[in-house]
Amino acid sequence: MSAPFTVTFLGTGTSSGVPMIACKCVVCASPNLKDKRHRSSIMVQTKTTTIVIDTTPDFRQQMLQHKVERLDAVLFTHPHKDHIAGLDDIRAFNFSQRAAIDIFANELTQKAIKNEFHYIFSANPYPGIPRITLHTIGQQKFTIGDIDILPINVQHLNMPVLAFRINNFTYVTDANYISDIELQKIKGSEVLVLNALRKEKHISHFTLSEAVALSNSLNISQTYFTHISHQLGLHKEVNEELPAGMQLAFDGQTLVLN
Image (cartoon, rainbow, N blue to C red; front, side):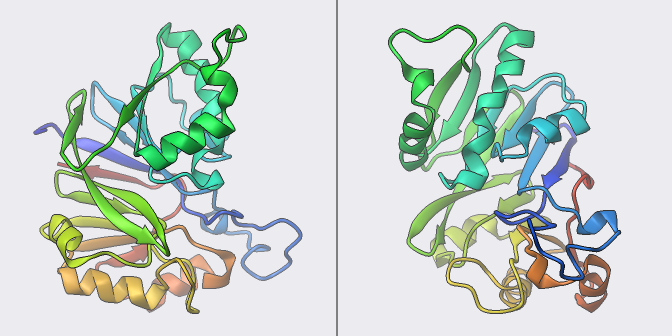
C-alpha cells in the first residue's frame, strides 16, 4: 500500500474503561477529556478502505462519535470480552451497505465469537441479526482493499494475541511477552502503539516502564501507549514523565501516516 492512511484511536482504556464505575480516584474524577477512555480499539482508513481493530463494548458509541458511514472489515486481536463485545452493532453497516461484513480472526477468537454470538450462525437466523463472513488469520500477510496487513504473534500471559503491522505502523495491545522472532516483524516500524496498563507489575500486560524499554530496544521513532488503566495516573502528568518520542495516546487522536 503506497497511499497515505489515518489511524484513529477509538479507545485507549483497559477493560473497565476510564473512569471506572464507582471509582472516586483523581484520574476517574478528572475533568480532562484525555482522561476519559473507551475500551481500546483503532480505526485505519485510506480513501477507499476502512477497517476497525476490535469491536469493544463501546463500539456503537465510537462509530457514532466519529461519524463512520462505511466499514469494510473488522480485525480481532483476541477473544476477551472487552475486544469482541460490540460485534452485534455491525448490523447497522449490514443495513446501510446491504452486505455482510468481513471478519478476520484467529481460530481461538472465532471459537469465542461463535459461542458468544451463536445466533449469528443459526441454521434459521432471526431477521436483522449481524451478517458476517469469517476469515482465518494465519502467519502470512493479507490484504483488505488497499491495506496490507502483517500479523504478529504476541502473548497475553498464556493467551496468543494478534498484533498487526501496516507499512511502518505496528499496533500491539494486550501483551506482556513478544518473542525474538516476532520482534523482528516489528523492527523498522516508525510508529508503534503498545499497551502500557499501569506502573505496577501486572500478570498479563506490559507496565509503563516495560513498554518504554521495549520501544527503546526496537529504536522506534514515535511510540504511543494504550490500554491504559486509571491506575497509571493523570494523562498530563504521565506524559510529562515520558522520554522524547513517547506519549500516552488519547481517545479521538488521529495519526496521518504513509
